[in-house]
Length: 115
Image 1 (cartoon, rainbow, N blue to C red):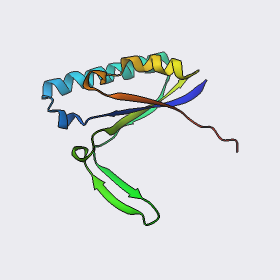
Image 2 (cartoon, one colour):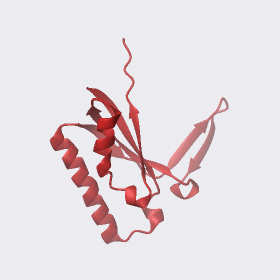
Image 3 (cartoon, rainbow, N blue to C red):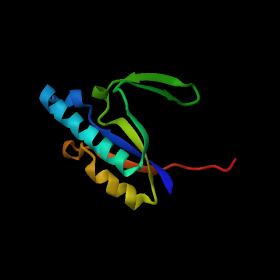
């Protein structure tokens, strides 16, 4: 088995103008998906990320603070999962709660280095 990261890219919920009830429903979908992966034994970790962004760029290390309003899409969070291949992770990602909001799941395999 290998480890993969599912990176969640999309708009910030606040920028979408979701009502408190819609937010509650959406969070219920996230918790349900999380529980499903835990019960299947594939979830290894993950977190949501705040919409505040600090970028440090280049040799001069230019610092820019951004908010979700200034970027079209943000990385909203990630999960680490264990699976045999990309296809298996893609199947896990079928239940991603934000596809209906135009969200994206980027799947990346964790690189393992010999020590």
